Length: 437
Image (cartoon, rainbow, N blue to C red; front, side):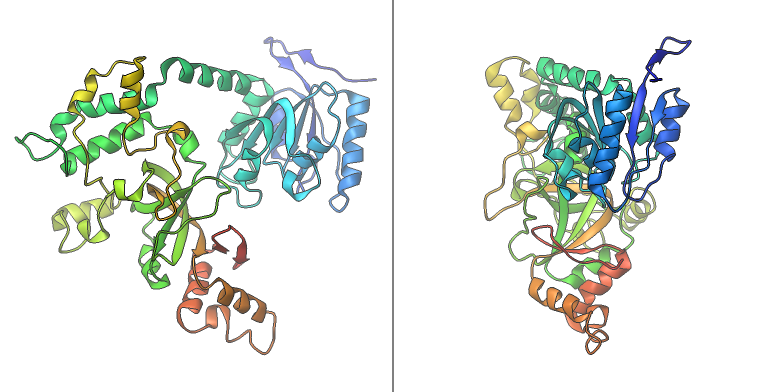
C-alpha cells in the first residue's frame, strides 16, 4: 500500500520524501532525522558506495513504486537524483557532486540547490554552473548538518525558498537601491570626510571619511554574491606570508576572482594565500582601492598612536581604510529612477553587486578588503614545476626525506606553511598540487 502526503493538525502539508544519502553516509543521518522530526514521511534506502549505477537503479525503483512528492539528494546522492527520472517530484540538491559522475549539468526548473560557499569536498562553484536551479548559499561545511543548513532545508521542503528568490528579484527590480543607496549614504556623511573644519574636494578622506565609505558599503552591498568570489592575498615571496599567522582578524588586501576563473596575481607577486572571509570593500581596479601599506597601520610609522594600535589588536584587529576618494556631498540630490542619476550613482570605483563587476585588464586585478578570514589554500604563482617534482619525489624512498617540508629554501617554506595552516597548495588554475592530509 502506497503512503502519501497528508495534513498535520496545524495545517502544514506533510510530504513523502525520498532522501538519497551521500558517499560516506548511511540511512538515518542527521538530515533525515530533521525531516522526520518535522513530521514528513522519509524514504531513505541504502545506496551502495562502490556502484553508482546500482544506486541510480535503486533510487529509480523507489520513485516508480512510491511516487514521492519530493526528492532530496545529498552530495553523491545529489548526483544520483540528477541521474533519475523524478516523475512529478520536485528536487532539492544538497552540495550535489554531479561533476564527479557522468550526469547532465542541468536540473529541472524549480530545483533548489543548497551549498556551503566554503565547502572543501564539493566546490560551491560546481553548483553555480548548474542550469535551471535556485542556488542558496548556506551552511558551515560540506556536511550541511548545522543549524542554518537544516533551517534552509526546512524552508526548501516547504517551498519557501522559491518564494524568497522571486521576492528578492522583485524587490531588486523595483528599488535598484544598492548603488543609489550607497552614494546617498556617502552624501549624508560628507562632513566626516577630510580634515575637520576644512572643505573636502577630493583626495584623502581621512579616518572619518574612510569609515563612512566602508559603512555605506556594508549597508548597500550584495554580500551574498560577494561571498561567492575567490579572494587571494598575494606577496612577493613565501616568507612575507609568515607574518599573517594568527592574524585572521586583521583585514587583508586581496585580489578578487569570479568562481571558476583563473586566480590572477598582480605583477611581481609570486605567491598567494587563498582566504575566505567577509568582503568589507571591493573595487574593479586595485589602483582605485588604495588603502596603503601595513606600515601605515602598524608600527612606529603608523598613522595611529601606540595605544590605538594596542586597542585595535585586542578588539577587531587591524582594519584598513580607503585613502583616496572623490567628493560625494552633492550625490544626495540624485533621484531614483532618473536615467542620468542612476548612471552617476554607478560611477564609483566600488563593486556593490554583480551588475557593477567589470573584469580588470591584463595588467591589473579586481581588489577587495577581507576581514575575519580563514586560509583555504596557498596559491603558487611561480615554482609550480618544482613543487610538482617535489610531490613526485615524496613517493620515492631515495628522496622523500629531502623534499617537501624537508626541502631547503623557499620550496620547503611553502610546504611547511601549507602543513602548519592545514591547507592544500594550488596552482593559479585551481589544480591541487599537494595537500598535507
